[in-house]
Every structure is written in structure tokens, then in C-alpha cells.
Length: 426
Ligand SMILES: Cc1cc2nc3c(=O)[nH]c(=O)nc-3n(C[C@H](O)[C@H](O)[C@H](O)COP(=O)(O)O)c2cc1C
Image (cartoon, rainbow, N blue to C red):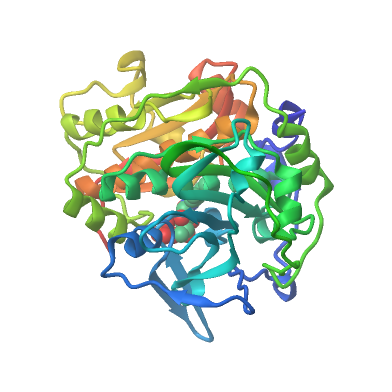
């Protein structure tokens, strides 16, 4: 079914020219969800675990235009629409009392939604029910924020944005020197009921930053009221169908290994805080070691309970000591400078021509939601690693699907593209 969704939401040269429709500004969604009736605990950025939460998606820049200010975050988002919400459960944690919280990005704080009673916990909805001592994150997507602009293709962006948020969890875990693990297998419908979600918000993934104990969680008494996270809503049945048909995961492969942390903590924090999407690429050469560092990090394992293979294709345009061409796993597949083709394939976005390299991520896996989020996670690694090296990066969700596949010579689904290179830093 997810394959059907993927097929139905492909861009082509003709589809982008014939599927008109501008934005309805009278129905613009709010990018913030606020639990106004729950107590706000301001984040004290001098405390490491508070800062950890901030690094996961806090506001780190703003852009003002006459009459309007947009807030940008530590994580990128397709169209800066920010459909991802972050919740977490704390248990036995030194900085957060046992309970369930929501990260209130607009107010730089967390809201306590529910205090845990003895033995309770969301873990009862996971296969092994084992209590997590520490923090257990739950990531949801509010799809209308994105479908307002991107229509049905928005579900792909929701999954990519969700993957970026998981990549941010990894980076923050590296920064605080703690392990983490991603889990996709939990009872979504029951969890939605506990959180009072309407049809427009659903959980995408969870992340554990803690230790599993031998005790099992015994249910959860929490029943929250519905809180509107957009201000407007238009249902998209094809997105809801793709979500619900895709949550029954099959043949999941466990990836227990943890990636190598290639970063020095203080420089990593700076890289996370200054990360932006670049378009001001300078058409100059980058170093081969930089590309190798990035590819090594992007291709490293991601610990999760439903791992899928995602391939990283590299179009090398301007890398010192490397022949221009298409590379897969470090091997030259086809020689040539394809900077212009890369730009055309990414819906003629001109800045792609001036990059040093362009990545395309593909997969033939069957668990669509985990594999698409993995692509977003790899994208976040590219952003964080690029920012660490002083290079510019931009995620690219808009490309001509079938033409990219033909160009690469693959029958796999094309999930995401990323631009990389030196930039003027403006
Ligand atoms: C999934 C995804 C797809 C994106 N697609 C594009 C794109 O096609 N073209 C582009 O210029 N930027 C793209 N971006 C970058 C966003 O526009 C950018 O993240 C957003 O405006 C916020 O700005 P910031 O990343 O500088 O914080 C994409 C980002 C993500 C996460």
C-alpha cells in the first residue's frame, strides 16, 4: 500500500506543470502546538539535560518580513512548516520528575501533561513492555501543517522531517555522551487515544535515551483532551490511509549496533546551533577528506528495531582529487560532470548547479515509514556533519522521481536528495 502511495505522489516534469493550485493563506496552519492548561517548566539552558531538549528542535533563528516573523529551528523542515511534535516520558531522571511532557517550542519550555503513578508508563504499548529509566521520546506528525502546501506528497515530508528529528536526537545524544535507540514498534492507536489526538496527528517513531529495567510497565491512566495543533485542518484521506496501512511492520530487522561518534562535543554543539540550509553555494571545490568524513558518518549504522537498507548515491561535481561522476559505495559508476543534470532532476533548482556534490537516497525496503525516516535521519547527519566542517547543505524533497531513478540506473524508490558544497555563509 505504501508503494501505491509512493507511486501516486511522484513528481514528473508534467505533473509539476499541470497540478496547479496556490496556497490558501486564510488557512495557513500554525507551526506551534501549545498545551496552555499544562504547567510550563522553562528550559534552563545552563543545565545539560535542559539544553539537550533544546538541541532537539528549539528555535535558533528568525527571519522578519513586513508584518510577519518566521522562526527557524535547530532541525530543518520542508518549507519551514515544522509538522513534528516532540513528547517524552521521564522516569527516574534527575532533571524531570516522573511524568509525560510536551516540548513547547514556542515558549522554550516543557509542559508536564501527566504525572506517572507507580508502575505506569507508555512502555506497556511496546512489545517487551520493559520500563525505561531515563527519557523515552515520542515523535508525532501533524500532517496538515505540511499538506497545506505540499498536498498529498506531504506525508513523505512528514517522514523525512521525522527522520531529521531522530537524527537530531542522535546528535544531542552524542553531545551529552549517552546512547540512544529508535523504536518503531508500538501500539499507535492506543497511544493516540491516551494523548487525545484527532485524525490529523499521529505518532511516527520513538527514541530511548535511557536504560531498560527488568520491570514491566502496567498500563497508563492518562487520557488527555484534544488540543488543536494547527488552527486549521483539511483532511487528506490518502495521507491517513498511507499512515494506517503502513504501521503494520513486517520482517523488521533489529539493528543493535551504535554508530561511532566522530565529533568533538563543543564543536558539535556549535554545529547544531548554527546549522542552516544553504543556497549560496559558490561553485568551488571541497576536499576529498571532507566528503569521505561525511559519507562515513552518513552510512554508519542507526540503532533501531526496524532497520532497512538505504543507499546513498553521490554525484561528485567539484571534489579535489576525485573524478566527477556518479558514485555508489565509494565506487565510480558513471564518469562525467552532472551538476546541470542534478539541478534539472531537483525540479530545476538552480543552486544545485553550484554545489560540490549532490546525494540521492534510494531504497527497495518494504517498511516504508521506518525506511523513509531513516533517509531523513541520514539527511540530518549530512546537515550536522556539513555544518561541523563549515560546508553548506540543503535537503531537497522536490525531484522528478522516475527521471532520477533512470538517471541513476536503479529501480529503487527515490526518497530524498541533498546538496552539499562550499558556500558564502550569508
Ligand atoms: C525534507 C526536506 C525537504 C526540503 N526540500 C527543499 C527543497 O526542495 N529546496 C530547498 O531549497 N530547500 C529545501 N529544504 C530546506 C528547507 O526549506 C529549510 O529546512 C527550511 O526553510 C528551514 O530553514 P533552515 O534549514 O535554514 O533552518 C528541505 C528541507 C527538508 C527537511
